[in-house]
Length: 198
Image (cartoon, rainbow, N blue to C red):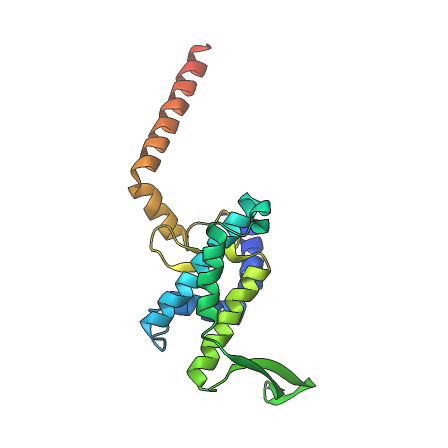
């Protein structure tokens, strides 16, 4: 990978390296954050998949949402059922940054009604998922095709969390092996024809 491409990818990684997104990825990958009950992790994964499905439906047929029946209505119901568990209120907090008062002096945050720390964290993660979906970036929240680890893709075509996973997938995938073999045969045939002057 050339230096300029690496620099561009690094900048994009920094832009998508929002702490909230990283915290969400840690929960979705669960092995990195055992603080959450497995059922919560399953619920978050399900919510992300349902929002992705809804986004795909909308992109494939924008007129679909004007209809009162269809697959999207069921997805809306399932999403709203999950969200109905979260009763929240807004609080304004005196704010510190790096041990000093925030220049603005305050910030706002959403809290769950029973105010336990665990549920407040859950609420912030739910809001992060919803914010990603509202910003039309939910399709960038994907699972690696090789190791199934969740990642926030830098570009819409990214399918792997690392070069190692990409290489492993391409070396073990039968369809990809056939594609590469056909490409190698065509390249060899072109080389032979060019030497013969055909």
